[in-house]
Amino acid sequence: MSICTKRCLFLLERCRNMKQLKQSHAQVITCGLGQNSFALSRLLAFCSHPNFGCPTYGWKIFEQIQEPTICIFNTMIKAFLLKGELNKTIEIYKYMLKIGMYPDNYTLPYVLKACARLKSCNLGELVHGEILKLGFLIDIFVGNTLIAMYTAIDNVEAARLVFYEIPCNCVVSWTVLISGYAKRGDVYEARLTFEECPVKDRGVWGSMISGYVQNNCFKEGLKLFRQMQMAGIDPDEAIFVSVLSACAHLGSLDIGIWIHRYVEKLRMSMSVKLGTALIDMYAKCGCLDIAEELFDEMPQRDLICWNAMISGFAMNGNGSKALQLFNEMQSTGIRPDDVTFVSMFTACSYAGMANEGLNMLNLMCNLYHIEPKSEHYGCIIDVLSKAGLLEEAKNIVQNMPKSSVPSEEAIAWRALLSAFGNHGLVDLAEAAAERIVQLERHSGAYVLLSNIYVAAGKHDNARRIRKKMKSQYIDKVPGCSSLEINGVVHEFIAAEKTHPQLVRIHELLETINNQYDYSADVIHVSHN
Image 1: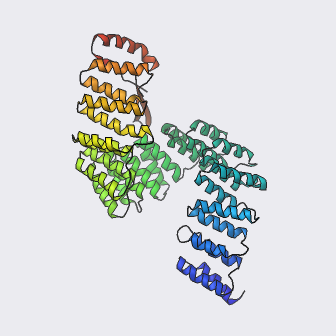
Image 2: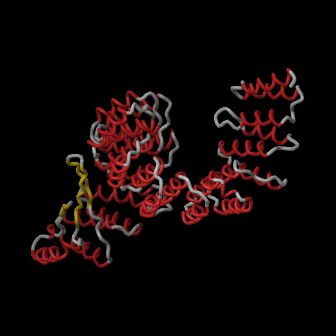
Image 3: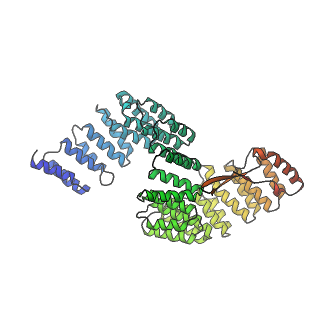
């Protein structure tokens, strides 16, 4: 190897940005290495870097290569995949097949990931056929990526068939399949798959715990976490984040504190994800001082971290602190998203800051160009109604764009119905309830309207609404709350008269109610 060649290859290894790469590329051409496979692969490898590279420049180099190798093809496919240019990824793969070159066990996972992100079942099945034809299903990496592709396009049945076709499944195969069921919301099948797994490592346990938490099965997630500890498996960061999320939703402060101490005992570094989970847990459990202390100590903060702290102040009624933190976030260059504004509207509602709420709406729409969703409309209506600005709230609801999902539009109308009820405006409440019924079949509007009638002394109307619910088989969803006692979370359900054990009691109450006051129609019975 000549001195010039060595120098060129050395320069390629030392590149730190595209300017340096272009200079090195010029040296490569000058030294006569323009078609050298190793030099070209190094050039393209840098172009494929997700942060410093440029796939477009890499494509120009690729087009000049007379006989590209499979390694060079793989580099280009990876480059466009990492940059999110998925159609270009598929285009290069098709070109490779067109010129008669066969993919290898590196090509196929890249292409499968592109199919998964494109949500293209047809493309995925074509690649699956190519895998079978070339015999790559015996490759565990290809097989696992194929399972992941099918779960990403919500075809868990196909994923399971592939799972059983793979000659030798590893723990990753089980983890991907469990996660696929959990993502679809089928925690029952996920748990059955989990129980079938012969060897459960940290990833398998974590996928099932995460699956429970993602599907709001928080108590089950905590129970499985305890079982994992009894099995002698040490949790990782992802498992801690899932368990802390369960604690936050259940208000299980004791377990959350124990996990915090466990993290400190393990001397685990406080990453953005773990720190955010702790902040969210403490904030939702009412320990704002600890949450704020953790937030201030965070070495790095992303948008989700800021949102967690702002939401904490909002849900605990500290609107001024939430507003202060929002302004601080903006000054650091973090751009708020739709979740941020939901928290800010909530903060303005709890603190009675109607003007600030309207300013937030203006900021959201005109500065950040974020289209308000049903949640935003519901929150801003609540802000305005608490300030007595019912006409403004009514105008916002009537002028909001029609949603393709009726239940989303109904959220804003329910907020308006509640506002009218709080101010005793029965006629306007009736009109709002009528609109809600047109949008969705839900007990909420009927129950709200019934309560409004009772508050206004119109018990005949309230009775009529209840009978209408009964005739149309619309049941009121029972309320549910949780309480932690000595580290154990207990759930309490407010049972309606449709509860099997209370039907006879309510029949007797209804008989009495026909003679006396209708307000005794509903009994709320709490039980463990």
